[in-house]
Length: 483
Ligand SMILES: [Zn+2]
Image (cartoon, rainbow, N blue to C red; front, side):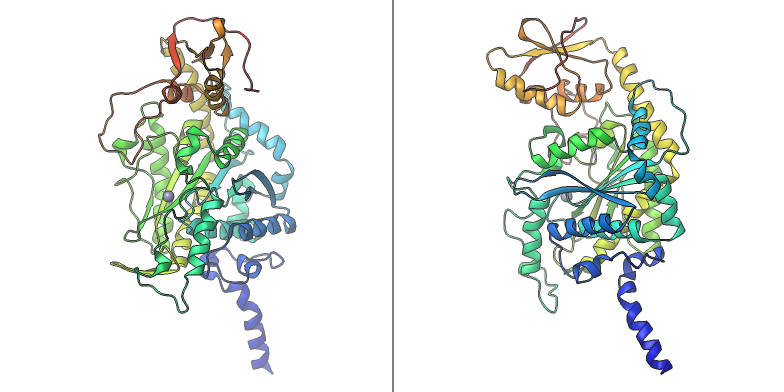
């Protein structure tokens, strides 16, 4: 009888603990909240999860817990939902509008605020901008579950001091293209041979969105609904820390920032971002990955010079953008020259970095707020040092082109005014001075001749806009939309 009872207890306990490979550290969990495995019907890593199932899971979490709410910030070209799950302590969730107001005060130049110990840090954990780099959206579900269901004191402490915005899939159309491929060609037993169809997606693959646009270049250009929805959300919340999870070639390990130093030095960025914040957070990731025995490297590759990456745009908005690159299993299991790499292994590294990001942000909350405030204050002081007081532009023969360009300025919250003769004016002395520089300035001196990719992004020139810097101006009515 005792034996039977022990077996019964063991079997009952099994589903709850089957995914301990990922979150053993964060027990106990609230048993009334479904784990991803319970909800999906398979353990995380066994299949690739469709985006609608990911959204349905996050929706369920928001229904059963007072720690979470779900917000839709847009729809993709193919009609998939773009969502953010907001997670925090229930008392923070209740007070969110007031907390938001206090948080946004740090983005006002010269606000001269002291650190506020009661104010949570705002973190945006964002995943899967490249659809065929799938580990991170699976990690997003594990992270959401941990934050919503764990009763471990460590997690409860994070929830008290952080508001975490989980964007599980930035590119759902691309993700589902790849998800379908990987599940369709999955073998039973799994086939690790790199030549197998499962590991060799046909062109165009799932990296890009519906129109095969790389959304990880679209943060500046803002062409697609995924980026436009995200930018609108971004300028409502100005998170202190933003993650951008990727995968790279299979014959590698794991990468986190700092990036390659020379290529990354965008001259308009505060050096503190590269030199202090990245190193500070890097120490956290290195300790966390050591603790699970995963290999990693930093500084050797990648750069954040181009402002339209998901890991560089937040740097231009007073936050800390963080790139992660996991060696891909591209499929469920693949043989490489360094041994076999499995899908659950890649997911565990991304999950570990997700929770570690929350830890690092909470433990350096005051510093991140001071940095955010200094960033926007220095926008004004830097503008005052420049002889350029404003940019004037216009193209009277093509109002549609002017309208499209103004739309770009407005989506980045750049102030635009009417000027004489049908022209427009952008003053340099404004909180978004660095975006004004990004749009209008051109550079011809670089510290390095090697780039990850984009090295030019003068948006005014993309639009063939006639513009000129001016030393004095009188501005007319403010332009708030292009309707
Ligand atoms: Zn990528």
